[in-house]
Image 1 (spheres, helix red, strand yellow):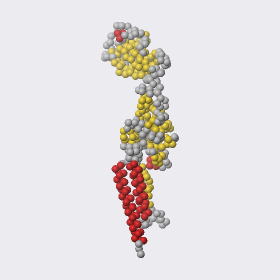
Image 2 (cartoon, rainbow, N blue to C red):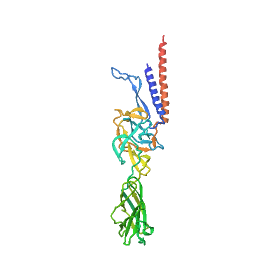
Image 3 (spheres, rainbow, N blue to C red):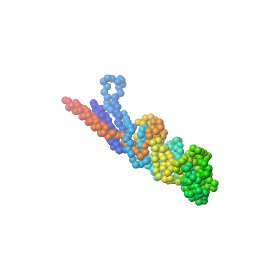
Image 4 (cartoon, rainbow, N blue to C red):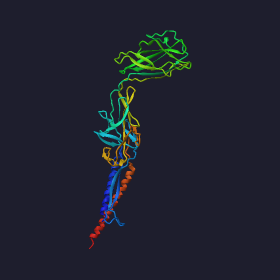
Length: 406
């Protein structure tokens, strides 16, 4: 009798409809991967071996295989929303229990850790106090909101042009009270002490009577200019600076910071041409304290903090994990998968290395469900269910005919 085949067909069509319905239900689930019910035919074992007249006894679900194809990328306003373009999974930690996901909707919790909606923590490589990424064992990514420690200025660089056409000032330079008539040009640069307090260093340039020579005086916060005799800057006949660099600067500060404030002043690349005075480069390596103002995540997973003092620092790096057999992963719900012997060991690394994809900040990966295809499959399975029900009905009619024989 074909009741068994028909019943298995009904069960198979029902299981296929379950998979299709689950796909349709998760059309809007970020990072969801559609599943496909796969079937195999069933034959009864024969003691005499297989024969040409052997008839199967129906079908059974062989596997429910998830389709790890790329979903569409959608832009969001959250810089911690991350999408993976390519292979790999985010590595999550739930009190040490490791799971994997493609859902990159993250935020920072009250303790400063990057978590998903379930409270699982995103893992990656940590950064040391200087912002250097340490590619060791992955750990929970922590966003440190403490103020950035100030850094005292240790080196300054100034690139400028002094006008060779200038005349020697008629008024002698007064270090205690410089006047515009006593120098040819001036410029200022902000430097920082060990407490992050800003100080304005003013530079005065005075043309000397000797050809191609200038005197440099510097003062801090409007104080007395030093040195008393000035520092000589010498240029050759081509306008190139020949004085050895850098120059050492030292100023007393009364802010409670380390005093004196000492740093190097480097004029390498400065020139003396027959054109107007101008500054084309002015840098220094110090900064005041700063508070975390924002976060960026790069394509290679580096989480960078932006601070109110204009500085930036790497806070960590997101890692991805890939598997030789992603279909061997165990679905745990909540957009999470777990490692199994069939999936193989995770291959962990930074994004955009090896076979791992790249990250995109402020984006999410949509579900890869093709709704049109799923609706067509639903109609197909509905017809299969009706056809199997018809085979059972036909068999029932045949059986009824046999029962009615006299």
